[in-house]
Image 1 (cartoon, rainbow, N blue to C red):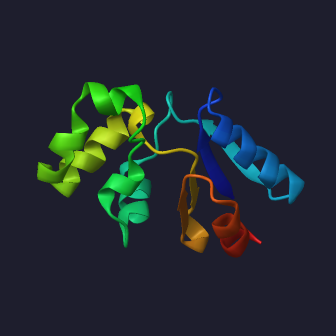
Image 2: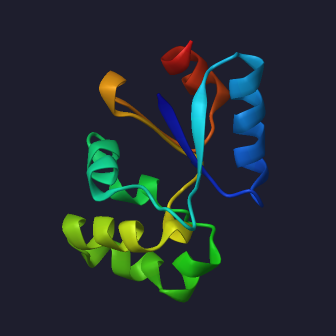
Length: 117
């Protein structure tokens, strides 16, 4: 089953949920702030991506931690552990279907259609 990590105050997350419902795609909705993605999910999503793509770079926590300057110097394991510990730092929605090897970060309707339909 598709797991969709969202923050309810996020309009992009709400649009993604509407899109999933419109296309009758079953999913489990998970509050990303309370239950961040697992380290394994983050590691799998990071494959073939720049680590920065997993971060919510427009978020307050990202700015408060000075990650714009710190992230390029961080090891991958430290960056992933930071995401695991703070769901606010994860770009959302964050979508996982480990069985189908699907990992989506952010909502891009065209990409979602190509991958999920």
